[in-house]
Length: 367
Image (tube, rainbow, N blue to C red; front, side):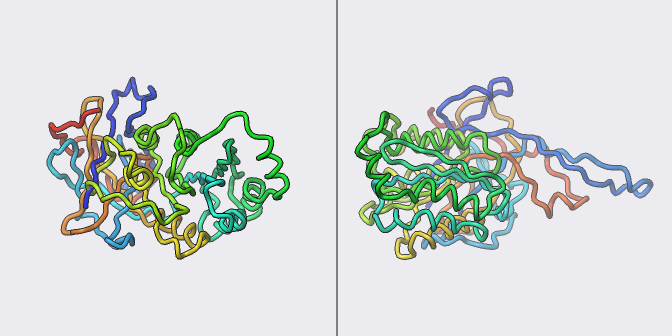
């Protein structure tokens, strides 16, 4: 199966402008290595990765299990239906810093889940989340409340934040419900707010939505939420509190972005079109689902290639793997490069420049 995914190339002068379209982040990453000059091996050499793009990509089998040990030489990238080109480098995400937001749609979760939520979230440290990660917690309960966990994340700090957000006494909650709230928030508006909150966070941006997956009157549409998340490079994952949401038919494999997300497919299509997925094994329990969710992120492939020489505007990108039939390939938005430690310490490795970027085809999608 495959998925259509689109992104925007902007002129250098105009890339600070904001728009609800998928945006490729252009970056320069520099690191210092030592020259191998036999005459003077102590001369430092500046290695510059020019306009390198990194695409976190989920690659799953038909049972939604990550496919391990895929070699770099099998990966291809195509832009605007142009020729499939080799990528510069591929590696597993591993312990790259994660910028994570968890949005909890409290009124639409079972009471048994809500009652244990503070302890379940606190249990993510230290085995799942690390000191270099960042975490924001959102509670949707008529109003939308946000708590930013202090960095570096510790078990104590996360435990306090989780208890503050999700462990309030029943009497306090009932009092607040009886008082009402000044501004009523719905699911899609809350998703857009959480994406906005992640936009300046370093690390690979991920939003986990715990909800029944149903919106109840947001001003934000499903398609606008998809486009905004893709623009900000945020992959959306979902844990749905219902077994009645039918998973959408898998649309085009390995392609960044879709032009529309229909009202009938909602959360599954929203997640997959941003490089995430709905975690559909409800039998595991919430604690196990959260642990598996973080483990799944760390098993994504980071696909790297130079920025193509394309005019500013809307473009389509496809990632594929040779001889991999029936796999689900879901790329997320481009992100700030984090050097592969093994690659960075190799003095004989030189990252390809823009002249080796994938050629651009002629079939650009409509904006």
